[in-house]
Amino acid sequence: MTFTQRVFSGIQPSGDLHLGNYLGAIRRFVPLQDTHETIYCVVDMHAITVWQEPNALRRATREVAAAFIAAGIDPKRSIIFNQSQVVQHAELAWVFNCIARMGWMARMTQFKDKAGKNSENVSLGLFAYPSLMAADILLYKGTHVPVGDDQKQHLELTRDIAAKFNNDYAAAIAEQGLGVDGEFFPITEPLIAGPATRIMSLRDGTKKMSKSDPSEQSRISLLDDADAIAKKIRKATTDPAELPLMVDGLKDRPEADNLVGIYAALSDKTKPEVLAEFGGQGWGRFKPALADLAVSVLAPMSEQMRRLLDDPETIDAVLRDGAARASVIAEQTMAEVRSIIGFIR
Ligand code: TYM
Image (tube, rainbow, N blue to C red; front, side):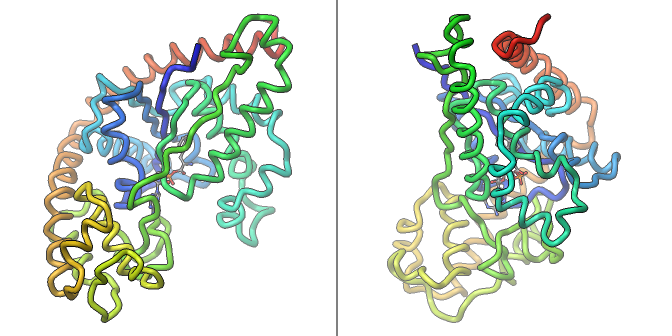
């Protein structure tokens, strides 16, 4: 027996979805619908680990759902829902808080980056964040998780938590005949591949494109219209040299590497294929081509997102339907977990 091939991934509704979220995650969610069971979650409980204004949170939750649909995720073939509607996420996260060790959490670089010098003053939720993320995935016994490069360490922790749970409760799992070859939770495979696992700022090729960057010029928002998209690409920082013929020539040229990666991801090509077309040419040729390509892919999506957002009730109905379907799987896992642990029901 093997675990069902099941993809799970999540996006935080913390405002201003950008090209990095699209190329590193959402765009890659779409083809997985053909080969796997797919569950895509708007992780609103993760978002509140830092302050969110309630109306803004509602709007941002609908925005992520609209981006999923506009990108081509079909709410009938995939489960699309927001995390807080399936209460078992919080329940399993508590169990994992008791499995994960303080030292494991303290090593998380994203926590250290976000907390900075202020670590006494951030929420306890921010520290425990990766344990909730492990619960998201393992509640559905997710076998594959498509994410950008910045989530790699969290997925390693998810694997550690699954392995420790399987090991700590091995006797109960065997006694109750649960799990696959003695393993109750699968050891999840991260899917971090392709030319766009780490999209960088358009202003500074050494910084990740991020919603927390104060400069709006640093990122393309998924709600930007055609003009804004083209303008941001035209103004993107570059070095003066022409594009190299080979990928090796992108080394130590972070801005060039980033723009070639964006072109490759938007056109489903590899970087060598892009350089075969544009190598030896200057930015005067490449930037307009990239702007046209980005507008042709992103502008229709942003229009559809706007149309969907005009009708929030329809989006909410999609999320409710997804949550109902997710809850069936989540409750089955949780019932087994309670019984493995020794909780009486
Ligand atoms: P979040 O909301 O920060 O980002 C959502 C997805 O976008 C990817 N991403 C990027 N990819 C390439 N280049 C970038 N500049 C870039 N910026 C963001 C992220 O890697 C991510 O895939 N902890 C997660 C949300 C989460 C989750 C989960 C993911 C919660 N539970 C379970 C997978 C499975 C996060 O904060 O992503």
